[in-house]
Length: 269
Image 1: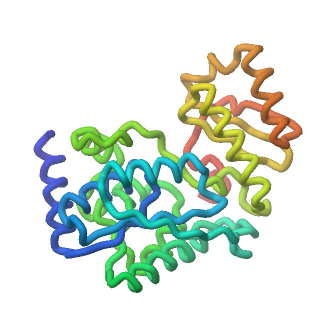
Image 2 (image 1 turned 90 degrees about the vertical axis):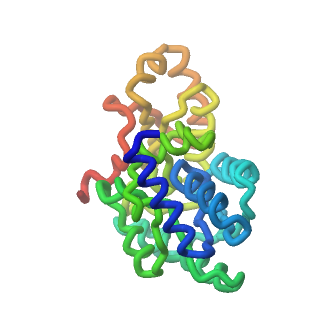
């Protein structure tokens, strides 16, 4: 571990130790997994992980969260939120603000019921570079972001995760399924289910970094640029088109530019 990363790691551990106890908002992604691991290493049984279960979270992410929490050894609680709030359904450009306000509000309330006064999340030093209205809700609820406080960016979080033996060190970045639907288009459980099935199918074909953006009846597939040539085999395209149409899409197309994080934010940033 290089000296700068070691310094940040020590700062993270020191910060968590000073907190005394904490509840980790845990998705099973790269950032929250590292945070849960270090929290458990430092605080032991004075911390727990909480995962929100909702139609916007794909089943494979929930499975990952359960597996990782077990591997880390941290107590893990699942909180069901199966109803989509009306404001979130409306899907305004600041949808993430309302979603985070509800989700983290639930976690904060649950933490208080369990005798915890601090909730932490996996926001990192790179998160100011993208459009993130959810950050406002996190700040309003006084949720702390220890990775950001320690100055850890995404690359460093991956390096540190690898050093600590976490399988998430090379896990692709992910976001909730609602992020596949353009702002202003209503979010429904049917659309979310269709998107989830489509992305799970793409994963089964070996595409780890993929988004299936839903534009009405059109599925727009975004792939890692290195995967485009493999995808453009005629038999592969035929199979994908047939399967995604079976899930309910009428048209299936490929984004020629490839995968781009937050591509639906282009009109607002």
